[in-house]
Image 1 (cartoon, rainbow, N blue to C red):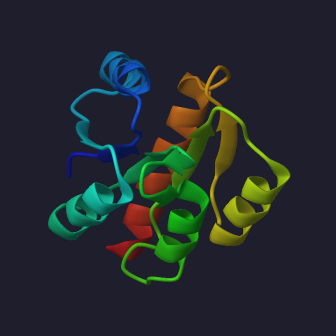
Image 2 (cartoon, rainbow, N blue to C red):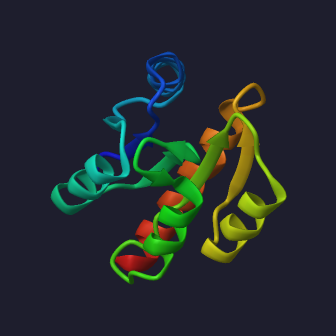
Length: 130
């Protein structure tokens, strides 16, 4: 099965940066991009998602709250998430930890190591589910 990544990010610049990093580093990964939590919910309902890169400040809510929402739903709770935010706050870290988010990273520090760790988790969790 081809791995899939859902990028939930409203900044076009950051969407492009993350997409380029994935395309350079991971062969045959399908990428979906949502600019709002509403769009993300639709993409999750319509597609099998292997991993999520999630911004915190989105037009229709907080990524940290969305991470908790997904963690509470058995159908999505297995998906590894990395929160990539401009200003990670202690409150956001706490919510992310509650939701089981793998990493909380400042956008300027986000790099290949976080992406590859999420992909490793996705492959491990996928193997357990099947």
